Length: 175
Image (cartoon, rainbow, N blue to C red; front, side, top):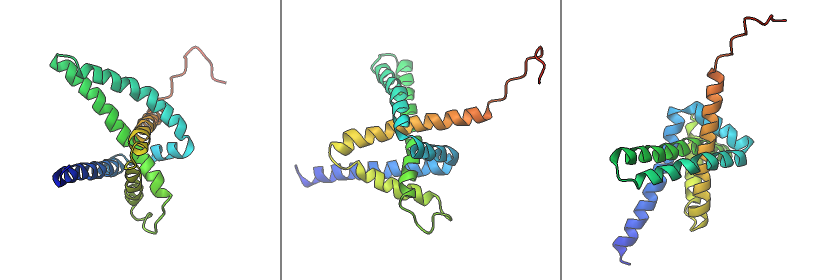
C-alpha cells in the first residue's frame, strides 16, 4: 500500500466524521425541539428507542435497498427516497445522543451557546466509531438505529401535542 492510498483512506474517514458532526449541528440548529425530545428519550429509555428504531428502520431500509435493485427508474427513485429518509431520520435523532454525551461534559458557556453540547458530544461520539469492528459494526449501527427510534418518538410526541381533542358526542350529556 502506497502513501497515496493511506492518505486517501485517512481523508475519507476524517471527512465522514466531520460530515456526521455537521449533520448533528445542523439538526440542532434547524430542529431544536426534536433534538431536545431525542435527548430526553436517550436520557429516559435508550433501549426502547433502539428497539423502535430497529423495528421501523430495518424494514424501511431493506425494502428501499430491494427497490434500488429493480430495473425501472421510478422504482429506484422510491427506493432511494426510502433509504435517504431512514438515514436522515437516524441522523436527526442521533443528534439527541450527541447532545446527551455533550451534556455529560459540561462547560461554562453551555447556557450562552447550547449547540456546544452537540459539538462536544458529536466529536466524542464520532471518535467512538473509529475503533475497528466494535465502532464500525456495533456502535455506529446502534447509534443510527436508536437515532431513528428517537426521531420517530419525537415526531410522534409532537403530533400528539398538535392533535385536536375529539369532539364530544352530541347525544351524551356531560356530567
